[in-house]
Structures are given as structure tokens and as C-alpha cells.
Image (cartoon, rainbow, N blue to C red; front, side, top):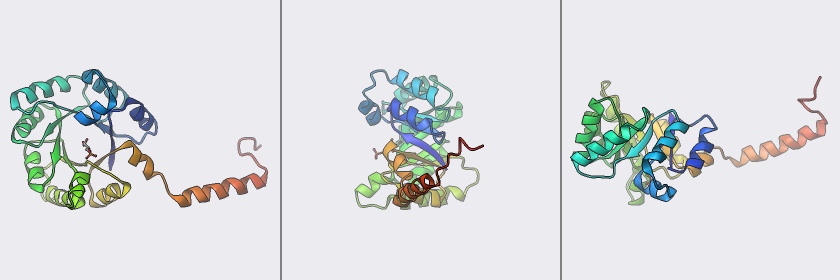
Length: 222
Ligand code: E4P
């Protein structure tokens, strides 16, 4: 399963990329606003220099003609830009046009299996179903992931990857992996939670203490 980080914060991206476990980045207009960046194009350029994998950059317009122009502009920033478009009729028209031209497209704001089928037909590189936002309205976000994975598996010709979005905690990630979702875009805080287990901390503390009792040093050993 590929791990993307869901942030526009350059310092966070650099830190997480240094682990060697990061396969890509997703941004959205809210995350860009939160980052405080004043030049969106430069921001995406910088992220693309840090991470080799796909970097999602979202269009701001909602009409076909302007979204297409914005998408073409964003695609020129770097080869690893994935243009992010909303799951609307115009958004999917833009998806088809950009995909036909060889640009990676991430279709965002997907909340139903029917929408995911449309995105695949429009040639999306990624479909982004939002788990947490469905949970927030008392619907089953994970069921949506399961449905989309199952549907896509019926059609070997579909190349669209299921990119699980709006992840709120490690269980969302683990359940998505069990279902065979291709990618998860994860907030930095949740990525760090993945490392944690109290028994790991407890076990390590005991090993460190016991090793000290041996009085040895691996690096000084003859
Ligand atoms: C996906 O690409 C979105 O940026 C993101 O996952 C949305 O998450 P949220 O529901 O926590 O805002």
C-alpha cells in the first residue's frame, strides 16, 4: 500500500520524506490556506522537489473551461503533479481531457460507489473517497472503500487506484489495507501514531536497562 501525506506543510513533508516511507503528497485548498503559503505554484514546485511520487494540486475553479486551464497550468509545474478535480460533471470532463493528454488526475470529494465508477470511466489515476467525512455524518466510511475496491476488482481494465482520503485514525488505515486499497493519504499526526504501541515503549525500556547491566558497547567491541 502506498502512503501519501495529506498536508501542504513543507516542514512536515521534509520530515516525513526523510523516513523513506513516503510515496506522495495530497494538498487541497483548505490545507494550502492553513499552510500560510502565498504562492500556490511555488508551493507545489517545492513539494515536487522533495517527493518523487505523485503530488496532488487541486484546481480552484468549478467550471469546465477554467478548471481545464488551471489543470494544464498545474500539470506544467512538474512531471509528478497529479491534478486534483472535484467529482462533478465538469470535473470529470476535465479529468477525461487531462488523462487523455497523459496527465495524472486525482478525482476528489467522492462519497458514493456510483461516483467512483464514473471517475474510473473518466480515466482518473486516483479516486479519493472521503472516509472520515462520511463517519462524521453517521455513515459508514469504510463500507464505501470496500464497495469501490470490490467494484474495481470486477474490471481488470480499470487502472484507477483507490486513494483513501479523510483518514482520521490508524484503524481507518489498517482497515483500508485489509480491503486492498492501493493508497492512503494520511495526516502527519496519524502517520506518527502508526509507529506507536505501549508495549513497544515498555519492551524497549527494559532492553535498554538490561543491556546497560552487561557493561558492553557494540561499537567498541573487538
Ligand atoms: C484528500 O485528498 C483530502 O485532502 C483530505 O483527505 C480531506 O480530509 P479531511 O476530511 O480531514 O479534511
